[in-house]
Image (cartoon, rainbow, N blue to C red):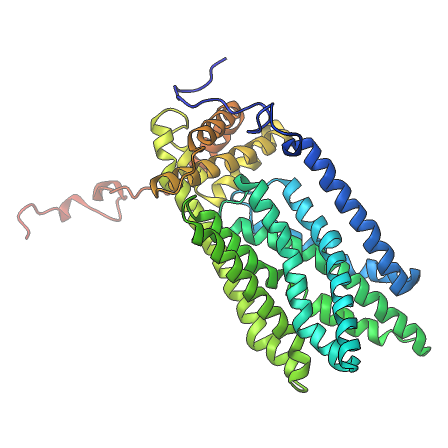
Length: 431
């Protein structure tokens, strides 16, 4: 079977880069098992804690209401990541970490700190205010950032820029907000039951503020940390400051923004609305623009870098254009799905993702930021593209034909019809 044009790239190790003689603590399956066990135990503990505080009825009501914004938020982040979507396992880990491990650590640390301050100062009210405006932002943003840090360290290939950092941080914060909303909404439901008037005013108000008005609050804070990790991913291996300072700066900004949001209630009667309209919404719009701009930049990189591989025979001539257009990508997936079924559409989507990663890898090489494993990684991506070419290439060529701009054609006057030109109008001596 053909393996593609000649390419002197060494083969990767069978298990994805970890040598067979690696120490036991570096074995991938063992790490997956340990991580899964940790997250499962954290989930069970946080489940028991939330249920104990809210009661069974409050827990069920909180769970039913808190889950409503989760599919929408995940869909938004997947839409932002559709140029080079990351593996689902990374997203599942990020959400599970936020909902289980980060939420558990935050609840334990926040409760301990508030109780310690209240005991030391003999002022519970001040302790609660300090806990909400200072302690909670530091603890919660740090625990959420750990998920992105772990992915940055151990799944480095999947975090290639700002968009990846934003998506992983946003999914982590979505999981954290999900668990936190269960707690707040469950407690609100308990307060309504204690009032005895039969009207769920506290629950409705809590739902409106946390789910309707600000479902993006936690993701918005943590996205700042994700941008920092995305910038660090763009740095070269020897640029240590550029790999350390952006994540730290993003984390500090996330803490500051979180503290401002939590403290908005102390700014007066309209403090919440002032912070919401004057700060949160503009920042949300700015970050959305930044992510979309980064996505368009990735498409431009595809159009600029992949022609070299087309010239070498790895890609068809029309593929760089089709892979650099969101519309052409969508048409290619639809074409493959219509003619060959959903597995073919997934194959085309995988082909598009690998091609985008290849273009970004080559751009890093030209900018002098490629790692020592550039040749190995390039060879892996090229072989993955080659193995999918029989399904993906016809779909991409069809999409390129459909979306190609129509070149203007000069029409001679006598071909425009009898009403447009008559031989009597021709005068070769007219100036």
